[in-house]
Image (tube, rainbow, N blue to C red; front, side):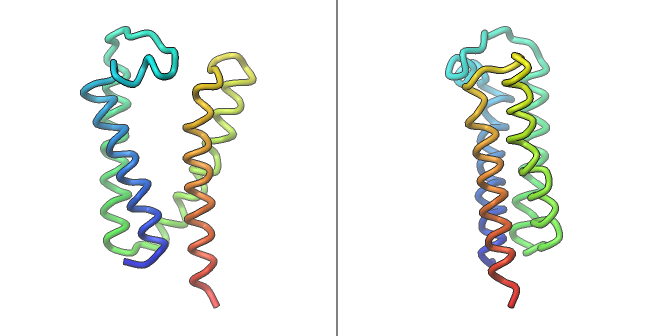
Length: 119
């Protein structure tokens, strides 16, 4: 596994953990973001979507799929912009900043490793 794939694997494991938490035990993380525990199923579905996404990340990491790695940077760079929009529009508070930062910085790390492979 090359260094690019390791960044994808780490992000996949992060997504896996978040997916498990949101699918099975969202009440543990919601208070950390000042969100009410409502028991609505959309949060569990979001956890399932994250689990599916983590599967793609992890499998792609083990196959050293450079195209997938490159494509992930596009969406992970968009995450901080979406979080900024949500915060500026009053739909989210500062607690959501960490999600945008993790995605954005992870995308930068992957892009850096991709560039370091090229001569």
